[in-house]
Image 1 (spheres, helix red, strand yellow):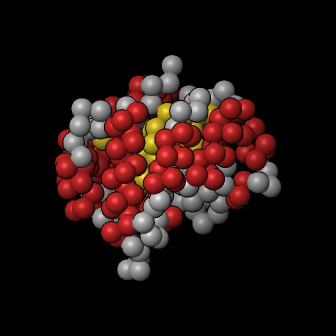
Image 2 (cartoon, rainbow, N blue to C red):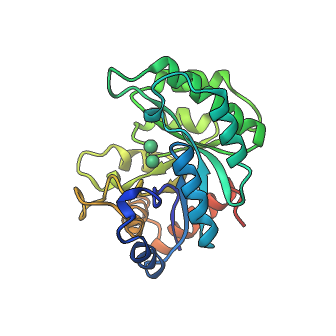
Image 3 (cartoon, rainbow, N blue to C red):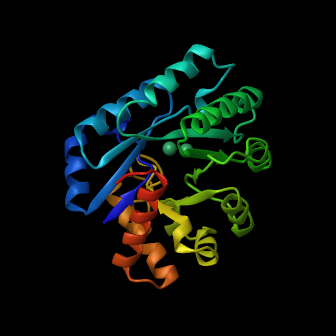
Length: 255
Ligand SMILES: [Zn+2]
Ligand SMILES: [Zn+2]
């Protein structure tokens, strides 16, 4: 019923009790979970986890935080190889993050473009992380425009105007637990766009929703996000959840 399109279930934060976390998400009604990679190692772990559980799928990706200098061709080739593994449904997470001034923007842009090319070549959606880098992000997406370029802005945190820019470029918006925070702009965004353009995620272990804010997030908490969307849009919870699951299955071509 519930869908977590972005959960780092293979991160070490879950090493201690992963079986229990998975049990809780089964009993909590989560029917689809996608684990995105952030480098070759975590991409491999996500693929491994997906091979064990039928409702878990993987992305292979290179997070901008991981890009401190020019990425070697051999690394990109490794991602291309990993992307052919069963149950890999997207390239991600990839993107730009300019939050801290010492981040290497040139290297990030170069890596992002090469990973985007991979997504286009393999005809896979891209799962994009963007923080404080929207001008460059939108410009690059325009420059890389292609019939197979599509995907999702994970952990979307922009305003309504930015939401429109992303949708126009073929990207859905994935709503995280921050939608439950008091100052969030997301309720306004959710109001302004169609339910078909929205996905749900936890980004666990980060960004736990209220009432778990400040603690480790886990995929079972995704229902708080679905609930928030349902009440903002005034659509019954089960209908909202079904629509979001349907959109996720369509985008990631999961039958
Ligand atoms: Zn991210
Ligand atoms: Zn993430």
